Length: 265
Length: 222
Image 1 (cartoon, rainbow over the protein chains, first blue to last red):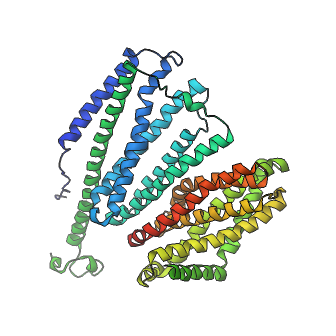
Image 2: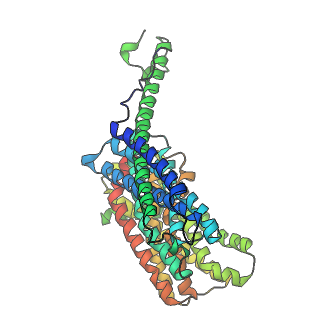
Image 3: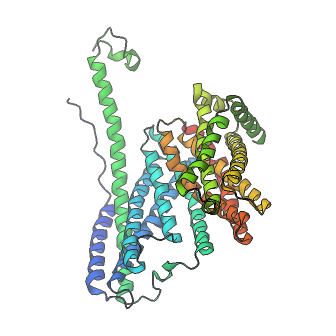
């Protein structure tokens, strides 16, 4: 086979490269500051070091990623801004968001076990985060269903918006569920509002670093999406060409897929 | 839009009345759930009675998945969907009609399920109006959200497995709120139950509006 699919695409834009580099440096600095420089907490001891990681991860997953996904799905459905660009941005950010959402739950459980004594509690925030993960796993499952790019894009945009409408309802219902059911939640002391000094700066750095990592990941994932679509199209073209070239001039079984100009080649 | 909705709802309900799939398949499965719950939790009446509101709505939730799947299975034959699109009926009307038909089926199902539950589990409703209002709001929400997702997964080869994954997390707040409201109506403090209507109402309103707006693009997607 001499024909190769044209899979070259524009390389990552400069801002995405810089976001990646700065995000990696920032994350490394957060880890260094969080583990060695900042002091242990008076009540939580060394466990407090998770505060530099867990809230920034949750911020990326719950606000940035799913917010961007909802916004770009909306822009896709709106006729004036309809373009596959928004569909791919939505797909990329949901995928990154699902990973960060799972990391949010994982780091939260790691934190919960030593501080509350349990891996899981039916707290409002935990429950709604877990439901959100399943909601957007459904989006990814829908995305994997083979379809024309436009059909898939529209279907997924609707699914993302319909899921997004549910987020505030889930949020408030589980809050009420908790307050009506079990009294005060154990999570109140989670993020001490009185952190300051090196701890506050490290936490801020963590937020900035992971936001940059998110930007970089979405840009890379977007590029992969473009390349995957192109590869699919190229493969289809190649297999059609091969089919035409191996067909006998008199055979009629592939006649419908064969342009008249190719007859007899 | 409303006239179209009535036409579509009438069509769906007529098909159900004639084919009786909902009657002889969905309904028995829902009642079967009650028996299975008793197997899972043990035959002690007090245990079953305290879990009754949640179990009732769990059965309704799963039946919603079955009912919406059925509602779009009748559209799948011989280009019915294209026919519906070509007929010039407003997509919002199609959505409202199909959702109304599902809601009517769910309402019948809930009545039967309730009778079965009060016989099998020995539970009684104390505040009838609260149970009825919660049911009506929950049913509208379930039917609207279910119809949206049914349309989304209609015609896909993987719909049987995909639809529950898509729709059940979305319906989770309805399960939560309707169960709590019914718990209030059955035995618990009344004010707790009433406050859950604040979840059921907005959920129903949100999904009816979203359905009216987004059903058009969804039908185009085919």
